[in-house]
Length: 169
Image (cartoon, rainbow, N blue to C red; front, top):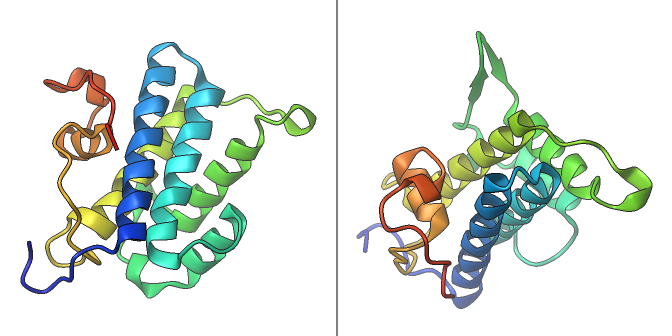
């Protein structure tokens, strides 16, 4: 446990565990090239991670507005090729595509969309739960978490060692 951080609250830990569960599902869907389903699960992981910071109220759209206004996340920058991308724009694209699985607003998701959402989830997870200088609390360790493995190895958890088991929480 870091000397500077408090232990995570029960709800913060539950949201992190939910995010890990959704990441596991997203990775399994990606392995079967089920891009919309994978993106939907990464979107749910994003929502769970944002709820760690902003609590249980509102929809994903409301959480992204809070995310955009929160200086805590200003250090996160995504480089897409030669240019910097707005992190809020990435989050909003994930939100839009997550909602696109409904029959009345279907959009095709691509492997790039899934990879972008995966990257966003890794970055937010790192800032909230991993980074020694920035994380908001000390969370209980889950050595087999797909989310933890994805952040640690920088690739799909199923490519990492000992990663076949789902997050038990």
